[in-house]
Amino acid sequence: LQVIVDKLKTKGAHLFATEQPVDTSTAAGKAFFDMLGVFAEFETNLRRERQAEGIAAAKKRGTYKGRPPKIDRNEIRQRLKQGHGPTQIARDLGISRGTVYQARKDR
Image 1: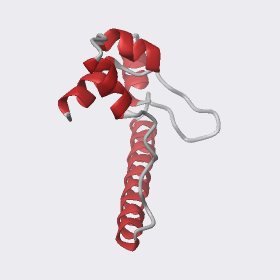
Image 2: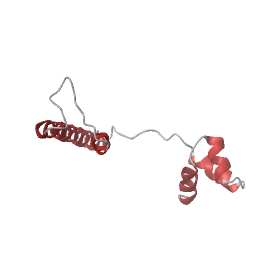
Image 3: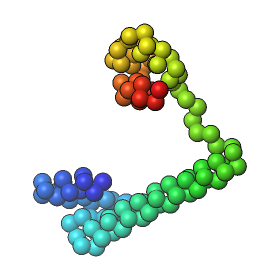
Image 4: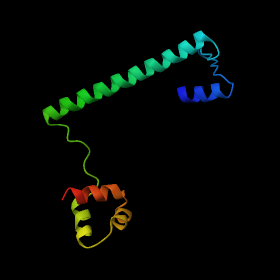
């Protein structure tokens, strides 16, 4: 949102919210807008920290295993041994070439 407001500012416009005291053409409105951004970022960081703590606790209990693998890396390796190229393997399996290269590296 800050980027959008900066682009508006370079074009000579400003943000005015009808439901909030936000008017980026005034110092008070800009300050309020910036504070909303700070609190939103703070809330996001808190959520991320709580999630990481929850995952760590679940791993400690042995209940968190992560997402099950979507791709069979052995199949990728077999296809590589058969002479298939990474691009073709990626297309056939619906994965990225980077995943194919990663599987080849992990042999």
